[in-house]
Length: 410
Ligand SMILES: *Cc1c(COP(=O)(O)O)cnc(C)c1O
Image (cartoon, rainbow, N blue to C red; front, side):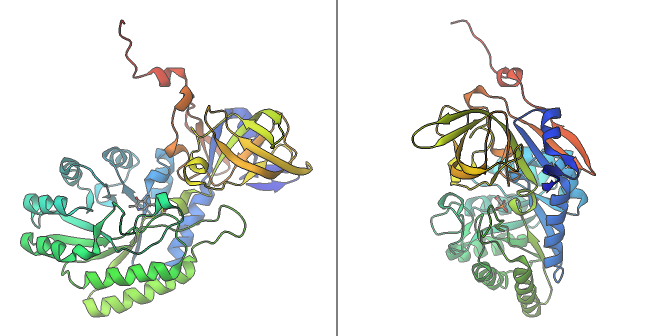
């Protein structure tokens, strides 16, 4: 979003015009930003045989998936439904990875039958997989390296108590099953958690994974997951992907020499690709001057963007209706009957009733984590592509909320 002549634009379109045309609350995604983020990663890792597997749970809209596919990414999914959506978006089965957790073996079987590459994160499932397929199906194994990383307790996944992956300490059990069934383990996978920025920690994990890979004869891929951190506000620490690219490239070459062949390097970014591209626009319903704060109540809430309440996430807020307004402190709160604070005593350009506020960095885990709580319909989604605003999801209505309910006589 750019400020020109006192008006905020996306690809030349005034954002207030978009809000007027499609209504608020409204999710708007800038396709150019998504393409730019993908190019940044492709550039940083040009020294290795890179494949990006977009972690689609961050934002699952089919039109977005098509855009990402065209930008030469594959896709990472976590449910059978996401696999179906990916197929609908045109991904071929072999471009789809299935990285579920705590699913029954029957889901793994369904994914294999579709030709999807499965990532196994449980010894019991690995045993069942071996018994059923032997070396007739390729797979990946998700490892928990027990390295602490991650921005928030709830999104750390690599620590010892995490439910994700098979513990590195159980490598002997993994190798036993591997040898017993002659498994075609093409990839080792690790995803140490969203939101980690420290290249050194990333490399520590990579070394553990390369070390383990030497014990397998079938490795063609090293999948380092994601956790690329993006800036939510000025001064936020972010992952230096250029340095990470250099270090991963060097480590891959060393591994290739020892192993005798060079693996593909996979990453599964979600947030890095779509976070900054998305903005949630909302209108100011009311102002309330209370002793504690001046509240600006907007026409959205934790039902549409849960990250502030769930992860204490910071989202920058811009008053797009009043860019010149004098700055003072406002607490921006939602309309849900539950505490749903987007910002507490935040310096904003004078907020007035009817103003449009933009909640930035809402592309990842925004719409995809939204709900109908308080029986409020979900917002519409817009993609700005080649200078034009396209509706890519209709706003929900009361009908959608009632859709599956069955009235019985009581
Ligand atoms: C959620 C997830 C990702 C993406 O994480 P981001 O922080 O959004 O980049 C990658 N891999 C797996 C297995 C995931 O579950």
